[in-house]
Image (cartoon, rainbow, N blue to C red; front, side, top):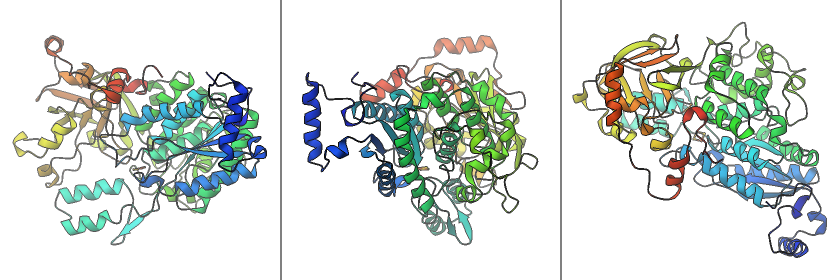
Amino acid sequence: MGNDNKIQGINRNLTSYGDTEFSKYMRRAFLSSAGFDRQDLDRPVIGIVDTSSDYNTCHRQMPEMVQAVKRGVLEAGGLPMAFPTISLHEILTSPTTMLFRNLAAMETEEMIRAQPMDAVVLLGGCDKTVPAQIMAAISADIPAISVVAGPMITGSWRGQRLGACTDCRRLWNMYRSGVLNDSEISEVEESLCFTGGTCMVMGTASTMACLVEALGLMLPGGATPPHASGDRLKNCVASGRLAVDLAAKGIRPKDILNRESFHNAITVLMALSGSTNAVVHLLAIAKRSGITLCLDDFDTVARKVPVLVDCKPAGSGYMEDLHHAGGLPVLLKALEPLLALDAMTITCKTIGELIEDTAQPGDWQTTIRTMDKPLKGTGSIAVLRGSLAPEGAVIKTAAATPALLQHQGPAVIFDSPEDAVRRIDDPGLKITPEHVMVLRNAGPVGAGMPEAGALPIPRYLAQKGITDMVRITDARMSGTAYGTIVLHCSPEAAVGGPLALVQDGDLIELDVECRRIDLMVDEKELERRKLEFRPKPLPPRGWLKLYAGHVEQAHLGADLDFL
Ligand code: FES
């Protein structure tokens, strides 16, 4: 519809007036008011997706990044045209940005389709922005290159190096258990986010940036430069230049992506001990590309890949350490025997060609480890199945307590994130460390799948020094979080999945070694409870109604079924 690929530049995607030449003439007339002459308008047009927003501190210096991309586009002979799209900030968006990932993907796709551009530079960063933009570019089917905001620089408090948000959680837990007082937590609050940029641990933003580089949709070395660095601006300029080249060659994401690229991305995910959210996003991105990918692919790769990157929450370092250690190119070199080296990238070189001359991780640094001296063993994320998750669930074993990976205990139920907020610290619940805390009705249909899965340890247990318990949910958890938490149980409780049938006191068994999560209640009793299940009504109007009516389950990527 109005997207004739033979037409180039400013004459693409013409406004429909029933007179093509009139549409071109009107376009030139209005662009003249912005100072563009015919010489400008003969150039290839490079759209730049600008997700600057006062609400998005992770993108604080994005206006400067946009200018840097424009410089690269102009140097290469293109005409840069920046345009705004929805900007999603994890901390300032209610109830969860996941509810809006698909909205951002739809809006970005439609704006790419509706406006004239021969290629697009996608400026994202904060968690959902990057997968949304990649999903959009795949569906819009034009040449695209991803640029991320880059991580914050670490802060410091009383000699401790701090970063958002693994340290946010660790120190908040210390406050909840009485180790830190009010004035100390206020000081911490001012030290956690030292600069603009994305969370500087291996949370979802950092993970997705690395995976997009591994997929071949970003310039080599583009995932890790900090937001405030010159390296970040150089990446912007170089990406602007490459976008003009991509426009000339007509290379689209679908020309790059195949099963091998996803194999590489999953390999990197496991070596990073990256965010479990990446599982949902990669499934959605693969589906948009027409590539078959399922949860079992993650488990298969995970069993072969050790953790090589020492970043929080699984390790102790931060993204700037990964950058200074050489970033993704050096990690890919360390992973070379496990990668599909023929996978293509937007540079028109394969991954194998890109890392041919890259050195192995140097022994002058400890952030990127080698295969013979990994940080941790294989299986950083495991896929579980069983009577509580017939379609699958995931657990980040690398951020869990080893002793809890095999556990049996009685359930204590929270019927929604709000219910957990209300009751979790109630001593009347008599929760013990052996209990399994269940949070349900927090899946895609039930609540937009918030990052509520890392339920806090009840205050009265935290004060006794308990730092981890088994938790099970259809929600997600932040990539910066840690704990023995079974996530993304599918199908979710809101559509009648087994989590909906659990009652307080039922025995639950977790066995990560056998990849099982089971409810120890007999079939007949479950059948009886199933008959009593009544789904809650869907939201009455607007985006929430469209979303809840069409979102797919987590094991399929939680995209809308018509996208
Ligand atoms: Fe934006 Fe963490 S809040 S990346």
